[in-house]
Image 1: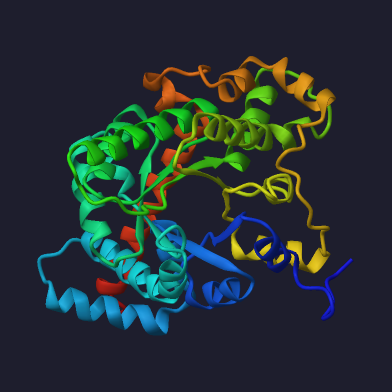
Image 2: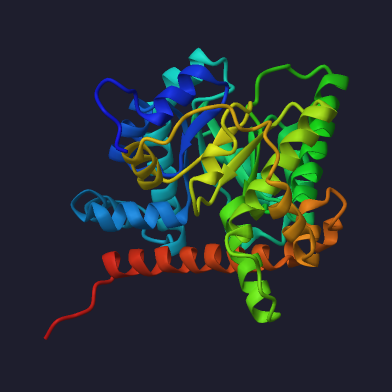
Length: 361
């Protein structure tokens, strides 16, 4: 049933009734404006989003890139492309500044992702995170939740960078990041550094965990009860949320990589963040889903029992299911990192086609 004028859209209802925050999984200016109208208090940008924005609006971005290339004749396609990521991020951050100030820095954040090509170099990730954090007061920086990335997360957070852990799919990763952020904040306090609201968030890409488990089950010729694997990411998100509350972590869980409405509806009521792409927000609103507290409701017992029969799900679900050195080798992490790297290459190619267009006879 579609929403009506008399019934506020589901996301409006959620943000008015519960502490659950809505962030828009895009920095596209038009989408972000509409998402803010629905209650969004955050957004994200990365090479994939920048690539899509430039492709969607070439009349704006192609002259901008040509002008920048003329002003910076020694810059590579990669440097020019990342300048576009920065510019798009800064523009989007301005739309969120009011929410940032209203929340005291807890929300109103624009996430910008570190270059995935730096994933093996903690020091380089920290340098870029510090640089990005200085673009606007409400920037939050995405760093991968790998063994190397968690080293960078702790150091960058200690230096005052607001963190959004990405490339994260498992409870073990989320807990390791939460612990690293606690260490960073404690180090700051011990040294008398300013106490402030960083708005740190720890992402679990629930839909990408679902994707990986479906592929793993298929390749291992395991038949699964229909629908069970749609709950895998939700189960990991709920488990991580419980652990964060039990341990008093000052960061919040963030649900990303939507594949179904459960990645939103099953988390309503939690003091966490849901970050669907704008099209998912529109679909959910169009279908008028009932908005009620579900974060405290367990995953159906039969579903969880089915999931726990798969060793690969157990690795993702248990807080000690993976060692830190295995975070980057988990199937969902490898596949997603490859997609992030490919997106960077696509952005380079797009910039190349703008500044060195093919010759015509």
